Amino acid sequence: MMPPAAAPSPRRAPTLVASTLRVFDLSLGQMLWSRRSAFLAVLLGGPVLLAAALRLASISYGWGFRFRSQQVAGDAVFGMMIWLLYVRFIIPILGVFYGTSLIADEVEDKTITYLFTRPIPRSAVLFGKFLAYLVCTVLLVLPSVILVFFLAVPTGGGSIAEAFPSLVVDLGMLAVGLTAYGAVFALVGTHLKRPLVIGLGFALGWEPAALLIPGYLKRFTVAFYLQGLVTHEMPQDSPISVLLQVVREVPSTVTSLTALSVIVVVTLWLSAWAVQRREYVLEQ
Image (cartoon, rainbow, N blue to C red):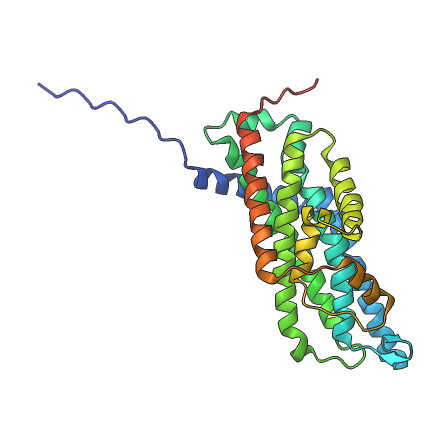
């Protein structure tokens, strides 16, 4: 007599890591070829055009960047562009546009239920899309910063070899900024309606204002800790350097990295907690 066939073992649900990687693979292509990425790629082309104009003027007319008749080295020009264009504007904008949309876009497009009916942890949707956001934004920012570096640094007699280590530090600093801003605005997108408007108000309104106000309010901003990782110094006696001396109380590198790490961990945990427990009611 034949023994009874063994019952098939139940199929095990994928782990959080495996589910996160699946969502990442699905989301990365969608982000890279979205209209949002095309718009932000155009935005990132602005600094490249500015650096190209400076380089062209330097080659054609022997003109470098000057302030009060003093020649400013190309690495200082590059530093000003990192400070004023990337740290103060572009990185927060990328964090706002992508971070707030990680879950909000799925709700708006009424596709969130399809993701949540899969046999995967809900938090994997957030983590996978967040990883896709990081890869997508790094791929957008990296070419822009490198092109600006090679165009701006030679302007005014700067040395590419001497300034190259600062480029590596800048790329790491910008990646940290993208991570922190993306995590903060992912939290906004999972909890609030109209997250894009609120995110823009935080990045372009609250943060600049808080940095100008004496006291502890600046410590409740990402920008305060991110500026502690910037190694560039502005030309002395320039209006920009005077302004930075007013608004810039610089935390140490260790303090900045610690605070930004806490911000990322706490905001992502709160976002995952909200996604795991919230009931999403899709409007008709």
